[in-house]
Length: 312
Image 1 (cartoon, helix red, strand yellow):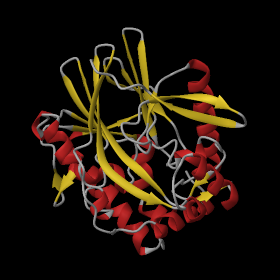
Image 2 (cartoon, rainbow, N blue to C red):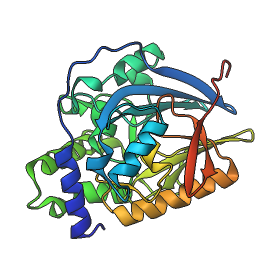
Image 3 (tube, rainbow, N blue to C red):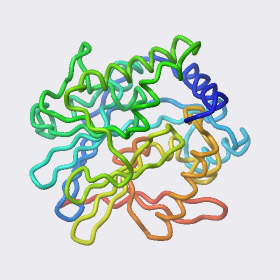
Image 4 (tube, helix red, strand yellow):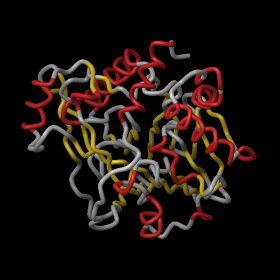
């Protein structure tokens, strides 16, 4: 379980996140479908959050942040970070990985339902909701007015993650916003109480799809490894939030991390592995459509987006 110090870091993080934002014009529905062997993966863009590296990151100084943003041709001192979810279709299964932010973060997010409609996926067709972790920008569409939005879906979440967010002692005396977010997590799992599956590291979600425990960002933070016909993809969820900085400076942790030292250790291990193995990845907060590879670059790494795949 996270220490009290780590929990206070979480509290600080939540206080930095605005629940409303300026009005925005949506360009098109963010939808990108591709194949991993016989598995079809569809990336869905729920929207974005504007993040200020100097306010949110530890382990990277403002001068370095500014330099890295300039190198990435990002004007100003904030980064618009994507919120991505995924549909996995395999062996007759339809799995939704995470549920976006819904209304929790204002008008720059909450487009998941439009993406599902554009993909031709009705809520009744989804048989599994895989929750990488129970932060608000990953569970928003799971419920509607407190009830389950997906009538036939089983909710999968790591047992450690479920235990952390449903233990009231972890939030005793916490700021109101933190308690609100905990209530959102509890509401999401509660809506699926009769079809809730608590999993462990390595659990099979579907044929060729297995859970990978990646702790630190939250205690039960979990990604998915997809393998089919010699092709692989790691959906790593929230290993990276502010890519222009954290790829180059992997030790930089974000205030959302419940256990920042463990998050840095996990990120270092994952980046080293995917770079060495040339393993393709996708992430919840990598620029949409988020598929790509990681290569070693100096003391850190560089993200190389996958080429657009015209056919499955």
